[in-house]
Length: 135
Image (cartoon, rainbow, N blue to C red):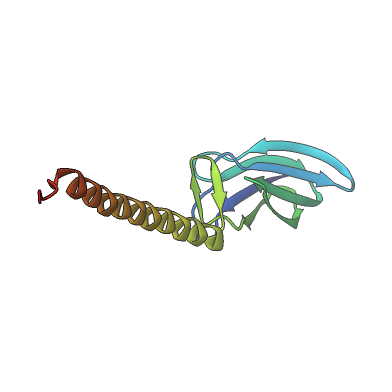
């Protein structure tokens, strides 16, 4: 008998992950591979059995077992440790916080360099514009 399998792939905040690779394994053999749609869903029909379902995206992976029963829809949700995706980079929460801290540090460093340069330039201009006193 044939049953339906709905795999939903979500991130750490519950956001749908579009384009995640879903692999369905029976025993040691890959039965089917596909990608999730815009709503993070992958739907397929499979013969009645127990399968291992694996989802991967951006280097992150999650898996679980699911039993398909004939004439029924089995639903499974796989959560990947992805807090946010920026320009194709899938970041966990600690990686995202680290990126924000790094950006802030770079901005502070640039500000300090610009400030020190303006102080140095002001001193150089003041020295160049002062006329030495004649005796």
